Length: 457
Ligand SMILES: Cc1cc2nc3c(=O)[nH]c(=O)nc-3n(C[C@H](O)[C@H](O)[C@H](O)COP(=O)(O)OP(=O)(O)OC[C@H]3O[C@@H](n4cnc5c(N)ncnc54)[C@H](O)[C@@H]3O)c2cc1C
Ligand SMILES: NC(=O)c1ccc[n+]([C@@H]2O[C@H](COP(=O)([O-])OP(=O)(O)OC[C@H]3O[C@@H](n4cnc5c(N)ncnc54)[C@H](O)[C@@H]3O)[C@@H](O)[C@H]2O)c1
Image (cartoon, rainbow, N blue to C red; front, side):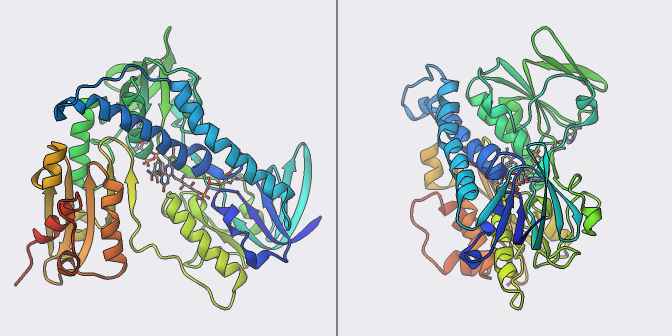
């Protein structure tokens, strides 16, 4: 039995909890998988590196409309893949080395589970290590959910954990799911030359977005990919050349590879939480209060294991709050989940923050919205843009800014001024007229959207 001041389960956002406050303390860092967690190894960072290459290929293909003739001669998939992981893998290895050999941390490389409120067992290389700690943080992240009909079919399939490491690009790929991961990989693989077929159960893609954005994106998606909406997957079988996904009342959808992107579930099922008395929500998330405290004193949780949001900037924020709270029990900080933005790095890019129009109406606001086309601004003319939109939602009476959604190039950056305005309490007119907007930058779509809102006199 080894006792620590702090034990951290999971080295994604959990790894950043070892702040200088713990310099003279004993810290156990426990990791059963790849060091550094999802975002670094199989999530945000590698996907966006692939997206960048995909965007370059799309730019080349679209160059002709600006009078620049160019074409994609070929895609060196292995070079793209190796560039991505040639950068990432050494970072993960370095992070692991630092924790294994670092000054005040002891690394346990294995699966942890609670055997009491402050007691863990960790399976390391076939032996069981016993760890106790004054404080324990559950930062165990989430894993892909596989629908039973696919899991039980016995067909080979990929998830986001494996698809980025394949050796060869397939000629075609079936993607089951219509959310973030499906939309991002559809863009990556189609831009790199793969025929993409999306199978999703809803009536549209990216259904968590504003209805107008989801509908517009679904329409564009159907022009670039084969999209099967309202699909009920009943099974899957191997074919001579790959896999066929069977659907209720429709023909099977075939492809060389199958990617399953049907959501992610918190890694809390095999943690022995019941032995510790740590309560979970019905969806598997650990229950935490605004400070990150679980139902057991001294046990904390953050990130995908407990959060309402499966986003790295949220996990990072929660880790900063918990890091402070671990060391300052008499001055607890709280999570701030008021204005959480998200971006989907697909084609076209999507981003959003705050309330959608429907949510604003449901919350009782007297709603005013403006949908600004990129194509009606000078920069949009330069881009020859015909599809991109910036939608802003505000309260007609109070002029309060409520939310915004963007579909188009640089959406992930265009949303940031709105995040800032919401976070610092600017009204829509204050945001529009309280500052300069550079002419003729793309940000004029935001300015024009704000100026187009219809307020009560
Ligand atoms: C393909 C993909 C793309 C994404 N892109 C984005 C993006 O662009 N932007 C964004 O904001 N978010 C993105 N996300 C989401 C983001 O990656 C996650 O929200 C974030 O990484 C969660 O961090 P975390 O620290 O909570 O968990 P993780 O980073 O998953 O860390 C949890 C760690 O705990 C370990 N662990 C679990 N259980 C145990 C146990 N019992 N014992 C020991 N170790 C354990 C795991 O091995 C893992 O290393 C993406 C996710 C995916 C899958
Ligand atoms: N850019 C980013 O920030 C980013 C990128 C990737 C992932 N993520 C995070 O990871 C989370 C998980 O991503 P995801 O795309 O797996 O989940 P998701 O919740 O975004 O989407 C899941 C999709 O699968 C569909 N689906 C579920 N079961 C199905 C079934 N049996 N048959 C057909 N379709 C089915 C759903 O209708 C939905 O469209 C996201 O919610 C997001 O928080 C973020």
